[in-house]
Length: 166
Image (cartoon, rainbow, N blue to C red):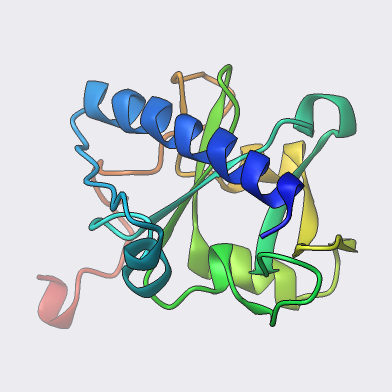
């Protein structure tokens, strides 16, 4: 494990604690695994929500959505972020703002090849422009008006309600 990876991992773990507290305040308790081995084999938490700290989005105008990672340049690549099988939700941001997005949607956007792919020594991902994140996020924390909340609520009158209108 190289020094940069170790430093980024530590910053990410501190950010996870912050995200855990923010989610708890809105009634979503997250139970994170502490051991790295459990995070690798089971995911970051029991709820299936991947958490990523993006320190650069305010200067780049993009969120870095990770798809593969490795612990050092000599290590083997493995699925990460939105490509993990054990997550359905993706929380990304910094201490000022967190976007919550569906991993299914993010995989679709990644596979569309519309967004720039970036490879570093230990990570591969794509750049998601902030306006696209604003459009497709389920919610942001702290809650803001520019990202419509799409969790809960009622179906529109013309929505398909199943067999015989139920």
